[in-house]
Amino acid sequence: MTHDYADISAEFNQQPRQIGGVVLDARNISLSFGGIKVLHDVSFHVRRGEILAIIGPNGAGKSSMLNIINGVYRPHRGEIRLHGQKARLTAASSAASLGISRTFQNIALFPGMTVLDNILMGRNTKVKSTFLEQAIYFGRARSEELNNRLIAERIIDFLEIQAIRKEAVDELPYGLKKRVEFARALVSEPDILLLDEPMAGMNLEEKQDMCRFILDTNDRFGTTIILIEHDMGVVMDISDRIVVLDYGNKIGDGTPAEVSSNQAVIDAYLGVAH
Picture (cartoon, rainbow, N blue to C red):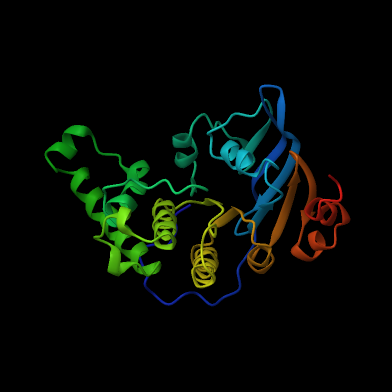
């Protein structure tokens, strides 16, 4: 699927979002480490254009689920299906080639590099030119670099980080580092974007900005988004649907209104069930 990144600076489309068919289907996912069950028979699906939040107490298995979708972990049982086909997610690079990109709970930028160079790293999966073409800057290598820089600059405009594009990421405040990591994930033009605690450590203003960018990404490009987030105000405001995990088990799945009235979810968050 090709997104309309070329005219990213144009006015955002004000038409209502369209949520389509199932694009990702997690079926009976189980994962254990050293006899400790991290995920137990978890199933859920995500529809095209949807914002799905995965929530739960610490240790519920949320990041492990993202790592399975991203190809970092392989489940001991179950499978991930993309567009109706079993996905061969053997590494993060294979997930990227299938249109899945992500950010991390702990910021994973390249220190010593500029904002622009960090963002350009997100285009590596789009490079088709050979080493020789790149060495002599000829043919596909030249056209690819020009296109990659064009897209990176327009993502920079979209996320309003023009003023820091040439700064080293080491020197940036935490909130801007999170935005740069978001840009690096977005520049790969993903069909599915995984966000692992995108608001963690942010102040109120930074959270409001990040919420706006997530919603704009979903609206503007139709990007399907799966996010983990502990701020329940954020989750309830921006999610179409919520999956709730507790000790590796799924205990809830539905709209924000349905989940917020689910007694099992209420008990897990209040600690009654423990």
